[in-house]
Amino acid sequence: MNEIILTPKEQPSVPLELLNVNPDTVAGKSIDEIRQIKIAHGNTEVELSEFFNVKGESSENPSEIRIVIDGDVYNTKRIGYGMQSGEILVKGNASMYVGTEMKGGKIVVEGNVGSWAGRDMEGGELIIMGNAGDYVGSAYRGDWRGMSGGKITVHGNAGNEIGEYMLGGKIEVKGNATTLAGIHMNGGVLVIHGDATTRVGGEMMNGTIIVKGRIDEFLPGFKYHGIEKNIEIDGEVIDSSFYKFEGDFAVKGCGGIVYANASKNGHIVP
Image 1 (cartoon, rainbow, N blue to C red):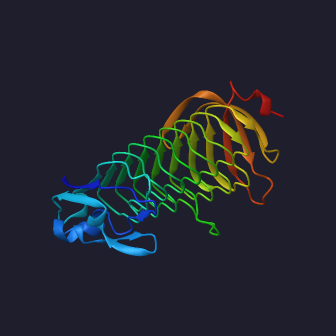
Image 2: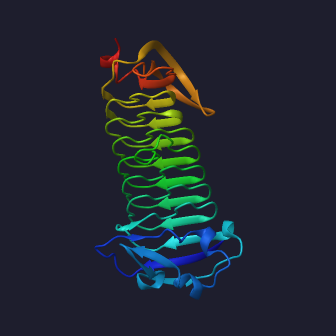
Image 3: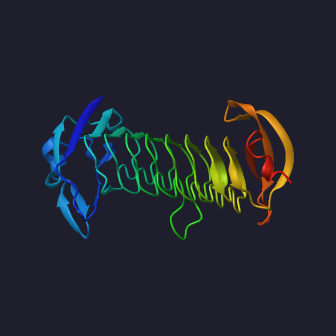
């Protein structure tokens, strides 16, 4: 796989946005042409080379390209926006909107990311080795269509309202999640290995949520269906006992399922 290495020179106080920098947009370009790609710096446009040193070798085929951001880009947004193929590796932290509208390929961030990671994602794989902010895999403000495909894995903790209006795909959080995980969920699978604070699955219509840790406070609009053991989700068997709930009956036509670890959630059973 051909690598294009972007080494950040600095992270300005006004955020950068890499809307036009992914394997699909750099395919077939020379390194000099890539250096001249316009990126957003606040409300102005600058060349990529103003904030990044660029080296490596491109390819005509985007699936054969890996873009390596070799450093911390904590104030750089929209990495991998709309990408369809190839790979992006971030060796540090990244800001908001990583993998927004992603359709294919793979993004790995070795640090933490800001909010809206995987927003409106349709395909591909997004792996976050650190923590993620709010709205992972969610819809944008005012929309009712969130993530519809692909997979997001957060190895740390995640924030509020992850999977909001999720339609399909899978989100897996290895750590904890905060309030309203899976709010308005309409499909897909959300797995939280740690704890979830409150209002899991609020107003969900469809889809499946599995919480392996403790749910501090559960909504009253769910019907309890007893205990299930060794549940199978997407071909994977989860070897444990879970309380099964259906809801959220606060909305009509609901059919969402929440599984809560039975050993840690006796307090939420009616």
